[in-house]
Image (tube, rainbow, N blue to C red; front, side):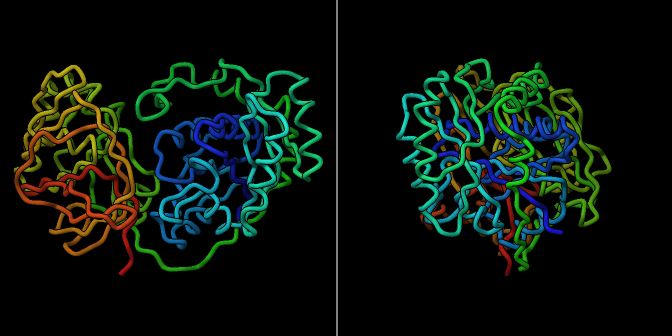
Length: 432
């Protein structure tokens, strides 16, 4: 049977959908339900919180970067009592007419639980809900959860208007700053760095369980429609992959590592922050993104780690870095305070966080040479999100790249010998 699911979506970023989604996941899991979490779009941080809340790995469902067959495969391979997918941005917000939460809802036929931030609103909330319910015929609104409700009187001013427009009220969340999760420049502070994560999630679950009929909400879930279409998984860069994993290198898409394992590859984690070198018998080394700029001083003095990278490259082992990992493979990284830290020196690249500049968006990249990402001529879809700037770069370009609108992207990655890197994170391979 196709997994039954719901999508928790908002009208805009910051509406409270993460709070509601996490609260529902934890509350249902505490009742003994198997909860499979998903995240619409390319976000890394929310899925880590999902995994703690539900007790299972969370996977991205990205209707811009993933073929329908890949989306369906991810849902089909992870059955549970109920699936809860957290949306991205506002319900209908995408890029170039693609990539919206609504597109995932329409593809899978999962109903939407709409989170409305009603601070400073009364009947207008009902008008917004009605507009969302009528905007697309292929998107079903199961009901709304009101966030930041100030008082019982505030709720009494909203609820009759919802009844008049035929939108069901599924629950409320009080205006309580204590429910907020700590944030930093790329979003929430990571789940692994939030010391009281269990207590915070339990508090969210308590808040949702107090106002939501969880069994009635679970009955709103519907079986997924799973379109059968071909897709090309990202090939593993080797058969024994040394993968950097710690607070500095944590942005790894779970579906990518799962695809590698399904292709027969073994993944061997190591911690650069603990000054660990990649396994000497690895036939590929992968440095993901994360927050190396917050740990640049420690990484610069992690000599076993840096020497291990250089030794692997000297043996001809493919070494690839994404975003933060790309910067660490360069010659030097300037932190937010303006201090330069020497890095691995495998790529002729200098980067800086001294002057923050946002780089954000989907990328469609054509490989200009064989590398850890794939064969020359292959096409990769990915996503870029960082605040670093390139001070200097030399050597050969790795990719020819366009953005979601088809415009040229100047940043072309780098390659030198068997080392390579890009600012974007690979999500999927474009099928030939």
